[in-house]
Length: 86
Image 1: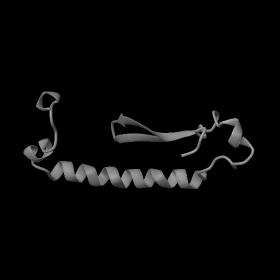
Image 2: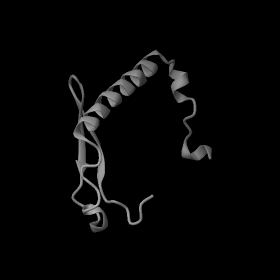
Image 3: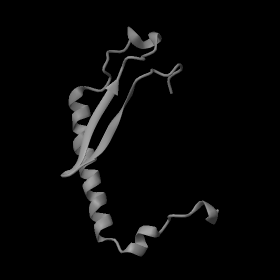
């Protein structure tokens, strides 16, 4: 871990649309701690790599959809517990 934290964030925004899911990759370097501003070339992760993660995410979600679509209703409940069960 870095101390203080570097101060950048990145992730995905997933929005349901009629044809599936609109996925937006975002990153924000605006709060990078001053300690790192001059010593690290930003963005740390190249744009091409961020774009590649969208493909990885899409493949992962497609595999998850196939597992859910082919699973029996009772198997979907396995491992799911209510707060009252604890």
